[in-house]
Image 1 (cartoon, helix red, strand yellow):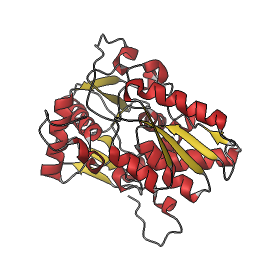
Image 2 (cartoon, helix red, strand yellow):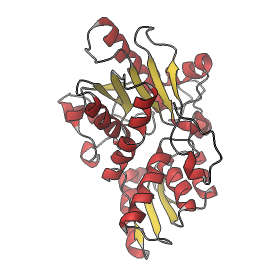
Image 3 (cartoon, rainbow, N blue to C red):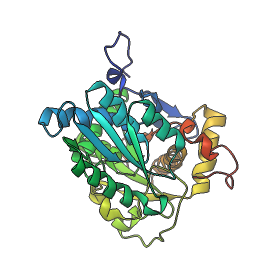
Image 4 (cartoon, helix red, strand yellow):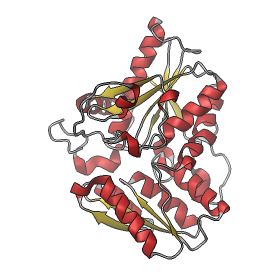
Length: 326
């Protein structure tokens, strides 16, 4: 595992190379490892795409120095873009539905970005429409479109995947990750399948999300508290490739909530609900590998803990399930 042992020139040099840590509540014979993405400077996995996408867009001329990046986001992507924008001479504007984490919005503003709220009832669709409207009104502005930009997937193919394989000497049996934009899982899955086509890939979504319909499952659409993963309209999640996924597992809100609290109390991981869901599924996959139900090339499972619970304290993430405002 690579660590930073020399002085660095910029906070951007600290993006990536996050720790890979064994999750203790898993079969001894099939260890589960989690990539702790809160170790990034903006404290989430989205720092990876912030740095990677802005650098590539500047290199390709799609974005010019002094230009503006405008992104509809629930928060972590905005923070990741804001961290990078501040170091790359780029202005940042983020369009955020009102209901999302106050902590995230405050951090985006602290990093020098402008935050524009849209009505909660308009959802992310309303935020996306507003972002494109602003881009048309702003000189040298672009909308990176994390939900449909291949650079999102490429960032994880080039960084997250290789880091995991380097840490485990290539011995990865299964890859498990939550799907929001699906960029993280798709990048990891593409890299994994190139290393070994038999690598098992599982996508994680909340119960009530509709990713499972892409694999023919008959599931009901419902609201869910788990934040950062899931979709109510798979057609908008252009990056997701069902053929790269062996199974899509739904996790109830309460199960994810129980697990995020267990991870803190028993293992010292201060992670949020998406990590709780990923941990639950990673353990299930490990148990199936151990029992022989899943035939994986190696006896190991890797997942991602995308961010920190500190982003959600105002929503009562460590209170009772009934009190948790997801």
